[in-house]
Amino acid sequence: MAEERHHTEHVPKWKKDEIANIKELIQSHKVFGMVGIEGILATKIQKIRRDLKDVAVLKVSRNTLTERALNQLGENIPEMNKYLDKQTALVFTNESPFKLYKLLEQTKTPSPIKAGAIAPMDIIVQKGPTSFPPGPILGEFQSAGIPASIEAGKVAIKETKVVCKAGEVVPQKLATMLAKLEIYPLIIGLDMRAAYDDGIIYGPELLVIDESKYFSDIISAVQNAFNLSVNTAYPTSATIGTLLAKAYAESKNLGVNAVILEPGVMDALLAKAHVQMTSVASKAADKDANAVDEDLREALGAAANAAAAAVPAAAAEVKKEEEPEEEEDDHSEEDGMAGLGALFG
Image (cartoon, rainbow, N blue to C red; front, side, top):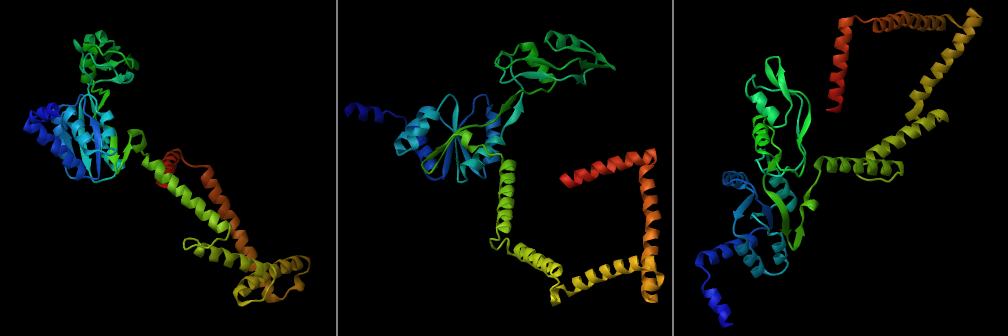
């Protein structure tokens, strides 16, 4: 006990203040997380801190002091200590862990890779022209393992090539040429290791949400539920209008097909009877013109003339569609693509 008291007395005040500050930030925020800051310049961290100031507090401290603060708080919080590794920062917020993760992902930006660094993935240089004029740079590309030549007065990459495989060390010459080509293999930003929220620790694998797929799944679920409700005639506030419209249409069809003389179907029954009557009259008139009266003959003649006039017009329209001019065809294709774009967003 004496040794412990002696040790405590020699803890510098600034360390005690730092531990107290970390504890106060944890207790005053709903969520806190641990993030990796390896390889991030101090200027970048300052910018991220400013970008997050309205929704989160970013604090960089020594791992040993953070560990002491977590141990002193007790409960499940000390379990966050296992995520302390290398360069670590703490981030505090009153937003959900999922929103915090999304915000941290938005801080990540492409960055050039340094000589001697390990390639995190295959580094690929794509075939195509560059903005560099002919000169010594052509030899620099080739000595870095990038196939290049002169095309149309500019240096061009001759073929798409993997210039450094994942896990390999990036040579100095290659790192220099990648930077000149503005190829940035690294994604630098705050790397969420874990977030603590009300006794639950969330790893990054639980915080990754594909919002477009999530939204699509919700829409699909709503559509399926709606169809199920309508097809099983299960009334809800969302489907009652469709159910009533469906019931009305089905009852009207039944009334027409069963020739039920009700006010709601009389118009449809009369229209159906008129069509049937004109069909019978037309067949009778074909056999004997005197089989129908003058008024009915005029009505049948007007209908026949209208049908005859429609045939040449339809044929002309078909011919016009079959023999378009070459220039018009180009426009129609473009219009069609534009229409598809408008349809699918």
